[in-house]
Image 1 (cartoon, one colour):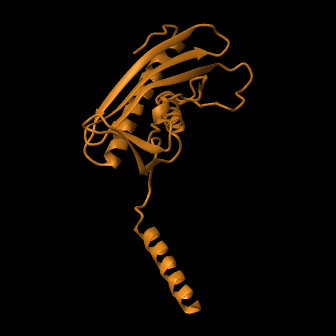
Image 2 (tube, one colour):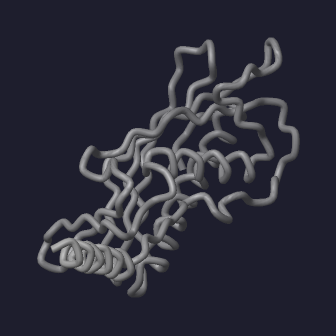
Image 3 (tube, rainbow, N blue to C red):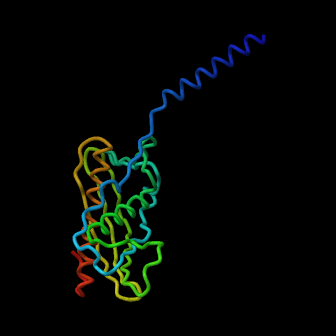
Length: 199
């Protein structure tokens, strides 16, 4: 009887290991890799503060949420963001905008006294992923000089065609984020110059 228990226990353990070995690997993606660009105007005399980004509830998860050809929404358990999408978008915007303008993002950091700080708020309306078709980012964003009541509010919709594969899908989202960041940088230059117009 004891021998049977030992054998059955060994079989269970072997089956468990086989199940673990057959589980597909998880893949992690980031939107911020390669987002920084060379500064066009080093030390412009002001700072930025890219605040927390908000995203639609249905995509506010670690897994990639994709749309199928039939309009079905699928949650990809093995394809994940390195951090929540709101954090990924926020970090990517911070790197891209600060890199393009040659400024420092002082979010959660104490800037020098009496320095000019432009606060950037971003509300993502749509963040859609259709593998082999497109990656879309539709965002309403605003810029406000700290201490001022004037706010410049604009909207950017970026839809990037993508080839099949999750790597290509993520690259499409990176291009979309870069488009939003470029519009923010243009608007910020305009606001600093006293015009305050959307791109």
